[in-house]
Image 1: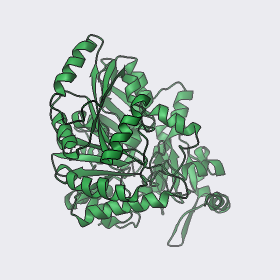
Image 2: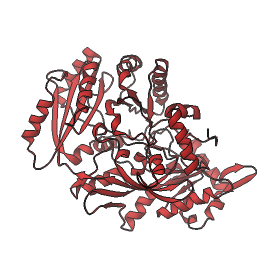
Image 3: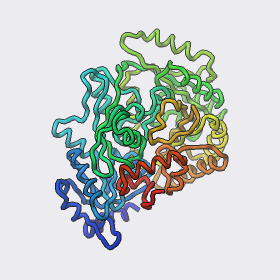
Length: 522
């Protein structure tokens, strides 16, 4: 498959047809002739191959060109050239390419490599990260990485309060989806912490927007899957940065006790982070996301897994500051955990720095890279499940499909969120219930095995459909417009289409999402 993929760029070097319709052919040479962008276009094999794959390493879509912007104006000029063309060409902005289903690809179109803008700004000494003098917000280029935002802000004693578990992602990328992790129950997803943005729309217009100014664009873009514009700047709210984190894991054999304790804990403002995951006999005690359990306890934990088949691990954290004593934090947590339904004798804790905690996944990534296990297929499935149906999901999926197939070895996340922390005006689609669960199957596999996990994912979705579980996919991978309509629901889909007509009427942006590719807005 890889050899065939590499043949496509050679073909495009000779002909480079971007779109053909009504007898009109728009070639890469014609795009290159557009003023101010011709020197930023690449069509060499290496450039094309790099953006024709993503973290998922399953979908491969080769563009006609890769665009390396040196400024925001370059991005605007590119989009304007498509919008004003008799036959527009597709454009996809690519941050880190951490999607798993080709969402940031543009077959036969142009991929905007946002990392090039980050490199250009760094070369010019323009960081792309600027903190307000009062420490109330930070202005960040959409091409910037969250790890750099963390390091820059913490140095000044402040930081955003909502993060993703993995920080080597672009700001524009996570805000185009939602940006979730264990802080979301209390502080909302990352999109709920944005004050203002600069966005280049599908018409090539650079517009500043917020809840007060151009609010329709603001709400459309946040969670909008790249359909309405390219985020070139985001203003993120800041708060005093904690210095230390008390990090705890508890084990459960009873799923009802596990979810009951999770739901109680997210209902009070006592913790800063809460997630959960599954421990199963076919997977390791520790996984690449963090090595938490001491080696001396692995046998004890393995014995429990053998007995119960599945264990549920509750992970929680409390942030604290220099002026707070560790003793007082320990006492507060001890009181908070009284009466919990976890298994006695399996309590694990660490005290780590704030930065170490937020960047906890990085060490696992580096180890996988060293073993050649990072750039492999990742057939991930991420779901939002209503609270009222999570017990049914556990029995049918965790203890049914997953246990029966016996192939899941990667992390399986399960933790609740509060709907009140989300803004329904934004494009992100979530369940209607006040509390819903995030479930993530973070599979890694060989190139000859990913189909097995894909089949498992499809069986999980079919189980939900057959049993009336009102699941919403996060980082969705729908392939038809009808599936997207069902994803958003009638009312939200209507608004989504209206916004598409307003901000990207020629359907230029983010074709890899497969929402409007048939050029038929309904």
